[in-house]
Structures are given as structure tokens and as C-alpha cells.
Amino acid sequence: MSLSRGLRPAPRRAALAVVGVLSAALALSACGGDGNDTSGGNGANFVTSKGGISTVPKGERAGIEEIAGETLEGEKLDVADLKGKVVVLNVWGSWCGPCRAEAPHFAKVASDLKGEDVAFVGLNTRDANKQQALAFEADYKIPYPSLYDRDGKLILFGFPKGTLSPKGIPSTVVLDKEGKIAARALMAIDDTKLRSMIDPLLKEK
Image: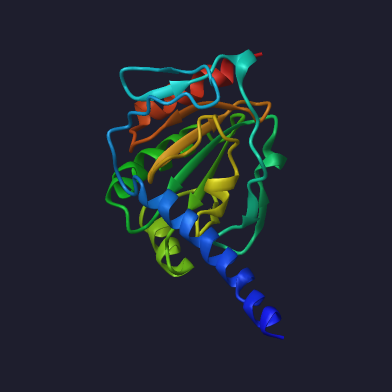
């Protein structure tokens, strides 16, 4: 009987451990940073430009894991369904100053590229409720959906180890038309830098 009682807390401990990992991962560089990342991870072969944008050659890119769930508006969205388009994944939070700084640039580029083979998906994280995030989208006229990822699970588990994964808030990862990770920025970026990540992928055959 005592052994049974002693084992009961194990699931709770495991759950707390997962939450701790998620919190620690997101706290490492939450909201800001210099955009520098010198670790390749598992021998990943990528190049980082002077502007802080990392890219991977076409033949060496890895795919993502599952990034799917409910948007801030309550709709279902699976990034895998966007294959065939260049996909821009932007990690943000309404509480994040650099996220607010880059939001107008993302809204502009998304509007400019409407009708092109490009899809934008936000990954909203660490907002305690959807209302704060929805107010952010309304303020900045964001024209694309965001998955609600309050605890950062999609961010932590959606990108294979050793790839160009998000490592802070804000971060931007761009997938090529095959759904593979092609470029990443670990900082707030403007429309010029964002287009520099997207345009080469639109031209790929």
C-alpha cells in the first residue's frame, strides 16, 4: 500500500518536468537578443550572413515535425497542409517589445505578397489568454493566422534537433515549398530582411 502511494506523484513530477523544460527553453532568450547563434547542432550545415540570417542549401534542408493546433480565432491549422508554398513561421508574443517593432513589417510583406505562393503563420506564445494576442493582431492589422502556443510546445517540439529552430522571441523560420527549413532569423527583422528570406525561395524550382 505504501509503495502504491509513493508512486502516485510520478505523473505529476513528469508533467512538472515538461513544464520546467518548456519554461527554461523559452526563457533563454525571451524577447530580444543579438541574433547570433554559432552552434550548428548535429553537424547542420548552414551559413549565417552579417545581417544575422541563417540559411541552408537546398539539398541539405530538414523537414519540420508536426506544427498544428488551434489558431487564436479558434480554427484548426496544420502547417503540413501548406506544402507547395513558402511558409513564414513567426514566433511572437503581445508582451514582447521587439515583436511589436517588427509587426508592421510582417503585415506589410504579407499584404504585398498576397496572391503569391507564400503563407504566413504566427506562433503566439506566453500570452496568458487569447484576448491579449487578438488585440495585438488587431492593432497591427496582421492579415494571417497564428497558432496559440501558450506553453511553447509547438516551438520546442516542432523543429528537429540540429536544425534552424527558433531560439528566442521573436524568431522567424522560413520553409521552402517542400516544407523544409530554409532560413531563420533570431531577432526582430524589417521588411527588407524578411523579403531576403522569402524571395530566393520563391524563385527555386
